[in-house]
Image 1 (cartoon, helix red, strand yellow):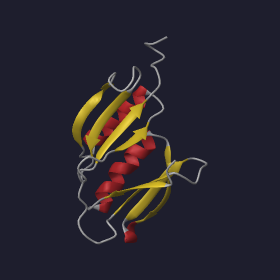
Image 2 (cartoon, rainbow, N blue to C red; image 1 turned 60 degrees about the vertical axis):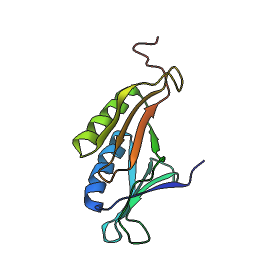
Image 3 (cartoon, one colour; image 1 turned 90 degrees about the horizontal axis):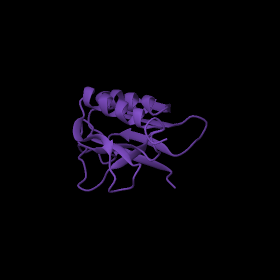
Image 4 (tube, rainbow, N blue to C red; image 1 turned 90 degrees about the vertical axis):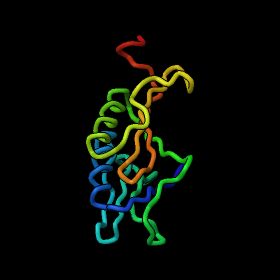
Length: 135
């Protein structure tokens, strides 16, 4: 469905550390990083796309977060959602919704919401039942 998602950042080293930790927890592989160009990208192992990209805005201005947009990253299980949320907050992210079920979306939707240090809103979610509690 997607070729890539590009998230604008202002402080590339800070953002690279933040997104590297989240990507690692999600099992994504670093495809490239070009610090001199202030951008990097991650993929699922063994596939070329879609890419999760971070970088400075192409117009050279400071990155600003949009009102109403959010990038949701898919986690393999609820434990990974919790882990990503904890990593995000520890790395300078801000809380937008602690990990938990969101039955208003569907009975198994488990998500966590946070903003990166540049203010971009992110979600990490899992759509599968919890095998330890829903069996």
